[in-house]
Image (cartoon, rainbow, N blue to C red; front, side):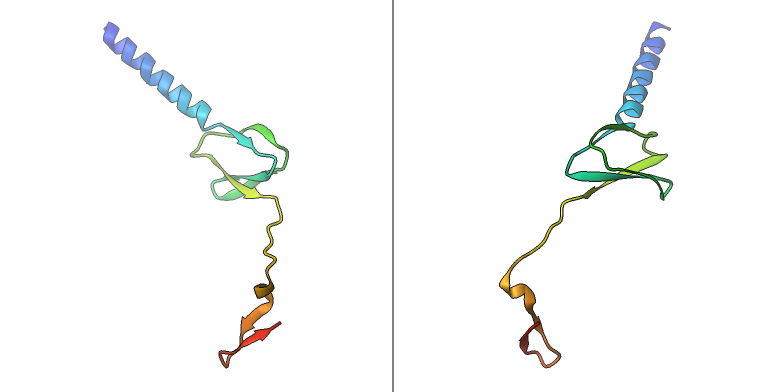
Length: 89
């Protein structure tokens, strides 16, 4: 009987750790987070810091970069025409 209680306590502790770990996430200052519930957008978090959500099967989070990423090269203006010739835009 004692072993059953110990196993139940360990299983309960593991389940609690899983729920807490899947309910907490951190938004970096260079990102923003979009929280989805069953595929629908629930909220957009723009403030950095520790955030809470429902556990993993109910809500998911995707992070997006808020920085503007550009490529500045002289070759960026070139393109290939339908005659397979290089041209400047």
